[in-house]
Image (cartoon, rainbow, N blue to C red; front, top):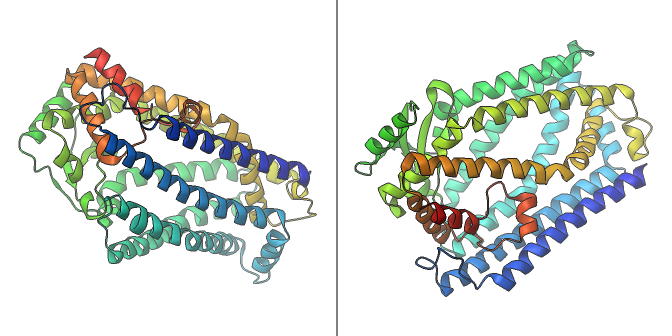
Length: 411
């Protein structure tokens, strides 16, 4: 059985590798072509820079993935997992503390492995292509804040789940699911006021006439927005973006200051009309409901498999602690869900198409959204030539050339 799962592990790696190679080869073959609708903003020099940027990012991602995969494979398929299991158990901690220490140390190792890649991305790749504006001090501050936040939130979540497992062995799957769901909703309320301001400075939109236009457009859509703010994203990067945050009465629209610098008011309104479309089409709550239903199923299947006692045998082992069995279950689940990745991506792209259509109707000028996407792709050096198979498998958004072509057709 161990050999079977190792082979499946290798097959997944090969599929990922083949898809990545297809994507890179497609870019090298077609990266010099300007897609229809991009002629006014994209020239040969920009296309060449876009290809270089995409290839540079892919090399870092490939090495990072290879290192992470190799370490995980060694941990799972060598005697390292049972050794680590015995090591944690040797301290004689209570069940809850044992679980926290077990995953805390693994998280620490993962964080240490991630550090050099984060540094290289920010201060080599992003710096080379003119995107990075972050100082090392700010990077380090963000890292420390992230570690503290992860320890607090992770400790609350894991500690609560492990306590429920300890005190309700037969029903923990239901109580743990409910606990995680409640914490998740609470964080969605809390994030705009407590978590996000730890990393960014928010202030009212400074661009003249934009806030009034946003409120009028939101009102036309029947949406009440508590705040319309801009964020100092330029302290870290020159990439531009916009997003909704919060739920219910704490909804607010946030625009990157870098985006406001590069788009006209009408283009910015078109981008925000797209985000409003996600709310009006119910994408946010529908995704939340689907996620919670899948989570409930996941918790129940985990409880069932852990109760059967055969998870250690999948790796040729006689026994493992509850927490090591969670690692094994997570690995098996990743193999099961990997073939479903294209389906998940398709649902996400469908929502994006719907939000684009809604934005065209609400804003009234499809060309504004098209030109905004063209300008954002130019300024962000976005890949305009993904391989179709790669895009269908991984892309949560439709390829930019397809979106822009459809928007110009509507306009």
